[in-house]
Length: 445
Image (cartoon, one colour):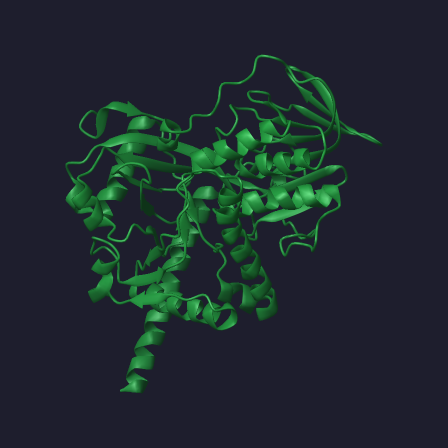
């Protein structure tokens, strides 16, 4: 592996260079709280912060160090997107529902910038734009048509780039053109999370890392929360564990956890980095199982990821797989080594939609399907507002329709087959839309 990685290589997120998860406190949680929040990612820390500012006593628990999960491991992309496109939602249900869904996604997107500004968190929040690279000509036609529907409904603008203009957006010939969304954004997820955690602790939240919840017992007027370090009680509990959910039963049966991978290069010549990503936009491809790229916000490095849910055994295998992704799109980086490689767990759902709700004394926000930064912060505050009696309107992601599958217990044995299905579906989509574009061209001629 020595020719693939730097001498100071770390199997840890690049974000932890600036924002390492804090060391856990030595005392044990005890006593009674108004609320216990399980999971210290964006959802959990946001809920804890707003509950504490609402005058409630709050304990924040995490099985790892605070923030060591996906919130300080993700790519830091900010957009108003879901795995289900505007058109898919409109066709499956109706356009009014699709409009409400994407209005809330847009509100969550804007909320990140408002949150960082209001809390004075320096986290490199920027509206850098996004390039979606089409992995087939038919994908470009499909994305163009879908975003045109979204623009007609909500006014969100975009620009389609044919292959001859692709180099305006990315220093690669790998794609078949694509689409630019100029007002998508990015952040440094580690610094955003650290800022929110600092504000929560300042507000009085008792935060305990490396404190796994082993049992929850809901009683008439309280919930008993059992950990190896001791037992505490709360009037209500917030479950915000997403891909790290361990609680059996109803919640685990509705989540499909999967492993995701990322990497960072050694420092690059700034001129080379400018050639790779000319305008500093985030980059994703048009596949369901995406590869993605961005510039580091605080150093001349390329950050990227992909190979989601693949079975990669060790650091060497992950590093080798990440380099193949990098060189597939940027073959000019053949001499470049990786300084950081890492993994983490996300969670999908059977309807590919996030869910926020309540069951008894337990509130939950789970199943983000790669939309966890913006929606996580929003859902955490929504849960707090609901508990405090300050919720203005229900979320489009509310409701009891949180599906599972018969006999599914939370172990995603089918994940490999699901990824192959997505690849097959992507290929079929590309063929259908390419044929449609050809028919339209012949008619115009």
